[in-house]
Amino acid sequence: QVQLVESGGGLVQPGGSLTLSCEGSLDIFNMYAMSWYRQAPGKEREVVARILRGGGTQYEDFAKGRFTISRDRAKNTLYLQMNSLKPEDTAVYYCNAFESTMPGYNDYWGQGTQVTVSS
Image (tube, rainbow, N blue to C red):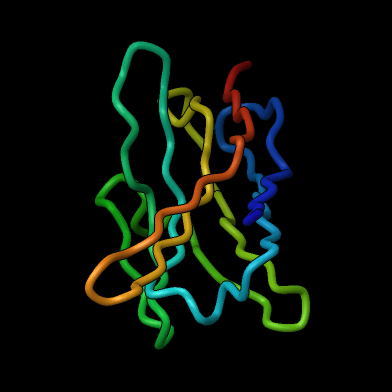
């Protein structure tokens, strides 16, 4: 049973910072991609940032310059460092692992961690 366990969410004031963590029971460095998604109330889930197997990173426009995705091999953990947080960043943040099993794939999700940005 593959598990992805997020942590690090919480309540933070606008302009503050948080670091989310996602510890996996699978080898996150062997996944085609590891990603952070978020879902705000009443909205669809959207991608935030992605790190590919080779280390390349991709960010949605709202995350560029404020968020940083990274991974730690020794801890087998994915991170999302979030700075200059805004109220509109309030959402449940999910970790995702995309495994290519040519010709198919596996898609794994964590349970999510709540981030609330409010004064």
